[in-house]
Length: 185
View 1: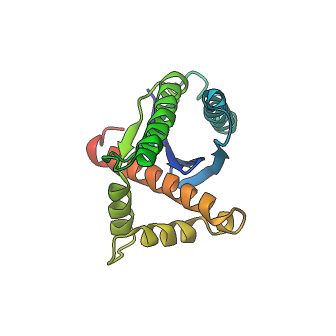
View 2: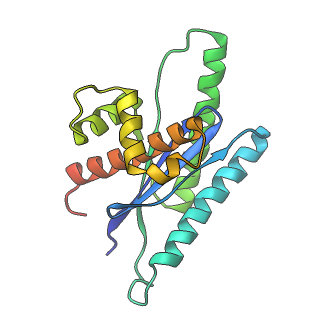
């Protein structure tokens, strides 16, 4: 029987696809990949990073008793649905939809699970509740993420860290959601 203790949050901000992996209670991997490349390279880059994450985690967590046990992963995607108000908004939304579709397809293949989708509003509200913050806004989410990943905040630029912060919030929301809805894991 497999146990679900791996929570991977993925967020797309601008041309950066960020990820944060939480195993049990600890942040194990966090980073971002740039998607400033030809569109035919996007599936390869996304597949490579997800495959490397799974292989790296599998190498570090495997023991002789776990070799026959199937890995159980929870995958969360930050995804917003809105009505575009201009042509540029429509192009941006189409780009995001395409990238998230690639991530979803690769998650099905690599992790054998379908990702859960979380809106930015849901992420902000959940992190604000967990942090006992009075104001539920994007600044609160970024401040809480900075306090949790202090070392990482100084090693990447602000845009990349914001994207990683949203990926972390997605992983936390995924964990809260799964534990509140499926207590049998």
